[in-house]
Image (cartoon, rainbow, N blue to C red; front, side, top):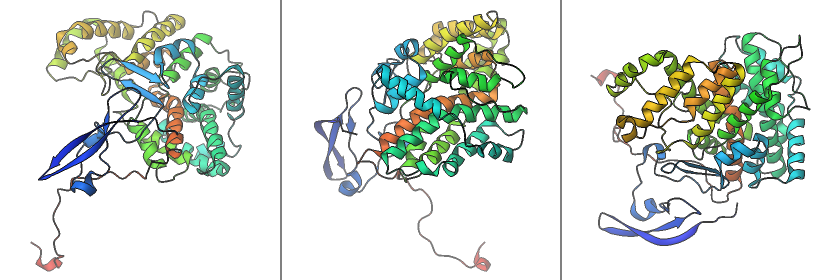
Length: 433
């Protein structure tokens, strides 16, 4: 990766009676950064930044977010334009290689992904090691990690060709694994992928088809899945992406790194937010109960799920796209009068106008609408985070690939502010109080 940082006038910092100069760099857009790599060696101090909310861990050219303005760009392209005009496979090419493909490149890339959708014949037996009631995310963590055992020919991270093959394999096989995780838990036979179907249609068929009859994929529903995947493909240095980069910094193989990302995504504060938003709407139940619930939120009796975002301090740009998709899906499947959607619409209206929410910038985020959309599509709640992992795989891979190819990257090793006991001597057990 060719660095594109721009040097800016240095910053000065005084620690005790010593003043040191700290380099300042700028990117193509966004805030400048202060280079503190020599802070410890020059001044003998660390910085304290729990959650790394003010720390840049890397230089990246993949995704840009401006939370104050509600902007999300993949390689410079606005997310709403990609969701409207592109496809998920095309976005995969963009994230991996940095540019939108031409017609031949897209055809070649699509064919490559299609040819990798099958799993090793022995891999299906691996699912039998899980209990039937295992959570699909538990199955995803185990099976994706096991890919390195089935495809050891693409685990050499120092070989660019092996890195590319591993990337293609994970993007291609993730829908197959995700659908099998669902089928296994409900006791239905696995459905193999079909080469004539596009990425989203293949996934829908593997999820909901059965061997007893032909399954006709509804193009409206397949497109909704494609849009969902595009919206969730990458999101800069979030918790799971940071986990993938951190695991990769040790030289771990790419399959293990993605499994680590899936494990992190499983946390309810990260990938489970759309399910939490849906549960909140179910708890409210009807429109007439909204004022009571909203007052409960103000009184800190209830939590408002699906509103606000750690990064976006404005309207989540993905939420606008997901809102449109949500309406299209509900109209198509005959749930245009879904009571949960009515609750959602009224709750959105209140949140956008009530001073309590406006002042706190609690705008609807993408999870607010995606939970309803996935429910209408027929996905059980336990599969919501699995779909998130399916979408985010390409972002994780692109970030991992960028990290591997960045000569400035080192093994991840944060510092700490130690507040435990100072050195003390071991006491024999008979002398302890």
